[in-house]
Image (tube, rainbow, N blue to C red; front, side):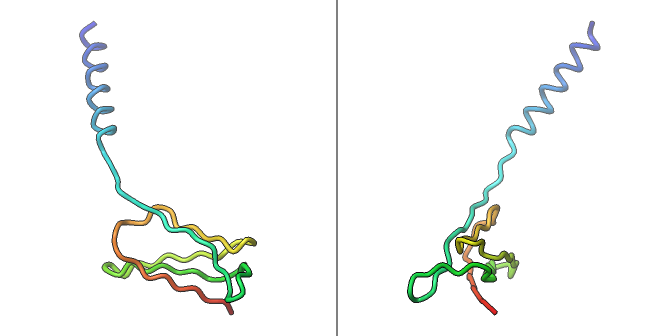
Length: 83
């Protein structure tokens, strides 16, 4: 009986440790349009974290939309190109 109780207490302590962990991230999303307001599908979008120089890339969908989930906090530069 003690062994079962000890296991249950150990499991609760392990779960409590996992629950308290927190992460802080954000996201960036938008729609790429030209000067006339028409959406631009297939554009290359890159975000660069200005402090760490980390880069992420994506391509706009058929509606010109892009999304970068899970970004670390900080200043970013965004670049959009279309070949």
